[in-house]
Image 1 (cartoon, one colour):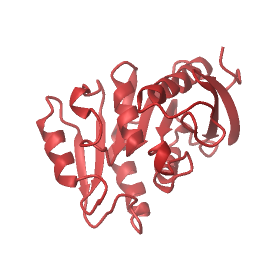
Image 2 (spheres, helix red, strand yellow):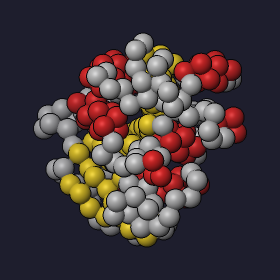
Image 3 (tube, rainbow, N blue to C red):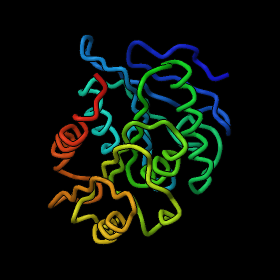
Image 4 (cartoon, one colour):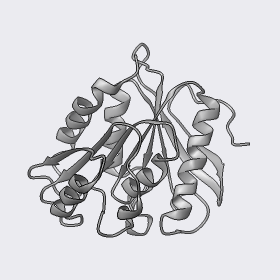
Length: 219
């Protein structure tokens, strides 16, 4: 059984028991009166390249969803920060995400589940989404040329993909081609003048996400 036994009612940092040991987690909650019956779980970029739950892009994604009324959960993949274990090339990290989602489902039953991820975290979120009752998936700068994206099936839910056209880590052209070739293509938005980490464009990313997912919010 995962700990804690109740979903926090205020912003909280805590540990869950994951498949490789302790998982460091951070919950944020919306302003009183703006809450919606949904929880967003967010995945950070590559553990071996400085990715953590406090990454600026992940933080702005979290803020945009919290401002829409969702409770949010960020967590560090195995081997990052206070999370135990070692990097596992996406497989173990997917198991970490599934453990966090299981805890959310236990502590907030009957509420909608949203998944979101940036870069490597986009791969993990998409990898898990097909087998979960996800109501909205958001993937930012998915590294389609670095991982087995061609093996992943589209989710059974609305899906937003955001990509910067000046990204020097993830090819915008490759992302566009991959997205358009899918049987169930996502809602792809290419942001002009945005690099991989959306420097000077974070507020624009915040607004873009809010505008594109607002129609899928639970009442």
